[in-house]
Image (cartoon, rainbow, N blue to C red):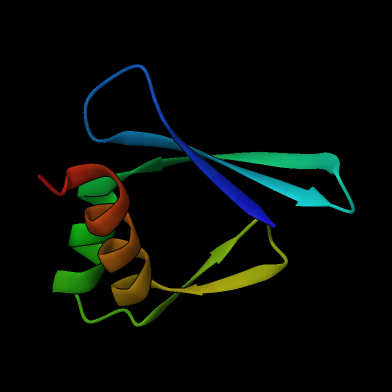
Length: 69
């Protein structure tokens, strides 16, 4: 399970990986970095050296959860 929470600065997020209720790892994520990957045509990025995440879907999720009005 991935928990995504807003970071201290605007446009930053903390992605926390949990497995069976136990916190495993944390990953700092910058929205600007995601947009750069999207611009470069990168479809998939690696998180935690174990999970692969679709960049476009992650941007969509962040927009829907944190930036909608």
